Length: 195
Ligand code: MLT
Image 1 (cartoon, rainbow, N blue to C red):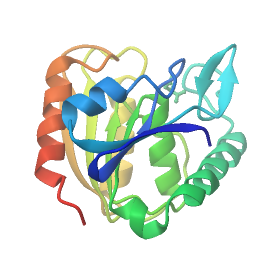
Image 2 (spheres, rainbow, N blue to C red; image 1 turned 30 degrees about the vertical axis):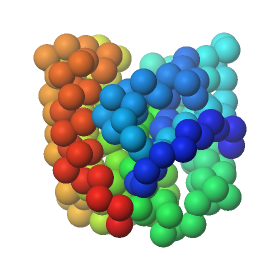
Image 3 (spheres, helix red, strand yellow; image 1 turned 90 degrees about the vertical axis):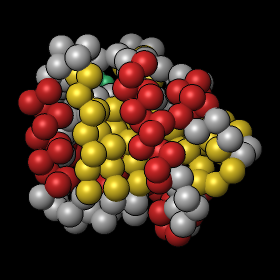
Image 4 (tube, rainbow, N blue to C red; image 1 turned 180 degrees about the horizontal axis):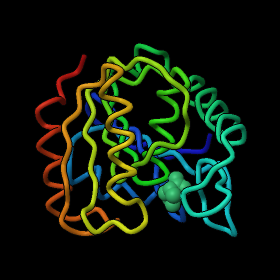
């Protein structure tokens, strides 16, 4: 998979942008939440009318699960070319919207993620797994792109299968609010010990 890397301390932050973004989008956020840490930021592997994404959708928040699985498995293969399971487990993944959904789906499909921040995600696949992971999940009270009930379905799915989750509810919409970025920084600071 295409990506950009910036050197820095461990743990590395591995970034997955949202729909219509690219590998540059979350760099400023990563610098804000962990200024001295190494970064790898991936570029979406599929395009919807020129908007980069991680997997296709059939409509707003509707998906063909077989197609999603194919793309997610291709992402997992790409990440495994770049990281061993141990390296991945010691990294912190951060995804926004479609990128957050891709991280959750990769976890459902067996990628060994131990620390991740899922910003404005929803449950896309019905695959089940168990999760030995510390997660920071955000949702927006006025999020019309991904209503909070959709994010809550993912939280429920992950929590009941072992994930340790801290949630942050933003009073605003689908965007990453500045107080939300600050909450993410606090979460990362508490967990940024190299493992
Ligand atoms: C998705 O397709 O993953 C969600 O609808 C979020 C998004 O539009 O990126």
